[in-house]
Length: 66
Image (cartoon, rainbow, N blue to C red; front, side):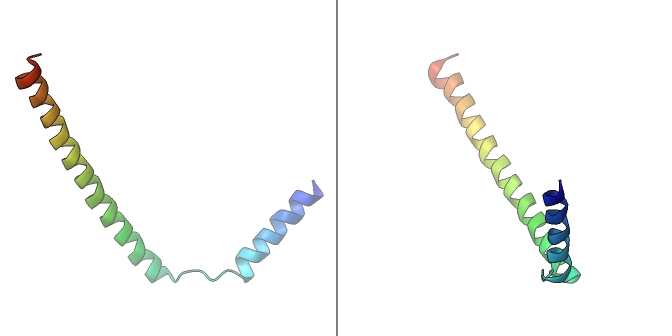
């Protein structure tokens, strides 16, 4: 158990004193970039999925006759 406590103390010390954190303004800007990219990417995937769904539906309706 002492090893775990030592690990937690050293980790806390490392995070508090030795890690260079991104400034808040830059972190917020990057979060907006990630959110916008995620929305655009999800819309692109939805569009491709819709096209493939319609192509498969057309295939089964017109060619296979199901």
